[in-house]
Image 1 (cartoon, one colour):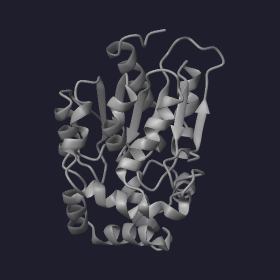
Image 2 (cartoon, one colour):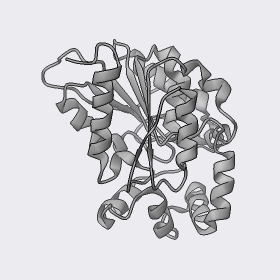
Image 3 (cartoon, rainbow, N blue to C red):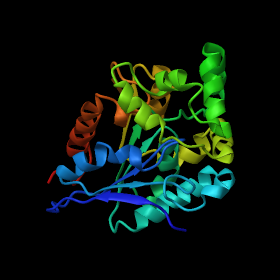
Length: 267
């Protein structure tokens, strides 16, 4: 299967482990290439972002709804195998679950989890969202059913991004969103403990956003507790952390952690 992988490789290799970024639901590799890939590459990290099957320019777009989390894990393992070294896996939201499930198969050197789906799954989170903000819940479902984000643009924008993001950037990002696999969303609805337990023991950094409309602090802490670490919560930031105006703070936290906590990271 042909999978889109966007790569930004440093001009001078300095022995740092490669980073493999895995996007969340409704997105693709492009969300990492806006800021993160060139930024990390400039600091000596070979930086790669995969578009999971049915996303971005990867194959199987017409078969998207047949893709489950196990398929996304297989895509991640296949991309990691081509890097030639043990990767650092970086996952956002749904992608955080994918990288935890894939970690041992990839022989990952470390995990970075941004705004991760909590170990108990999406089920209770979706129910809470439906009760708290019915208009937003309806807008998200309209997007998933293929109606785009036009009718619920305001709600979806507020769900994903903070008020500090410019409207022009927000609309540009929203225009690139796509449907997610119904099967993958169904898989995410269930508790993930059994599938992600194998990742425990791999060095992990857990990052959350204070103004995340989907995953609150307690949910981020649940993921951190499972990995026996303390999470870092960024103020004035919303769910799509890699595209927020404060993205650089997130990137710098990742590099500082890698340099201080993961063996062999300091060049």
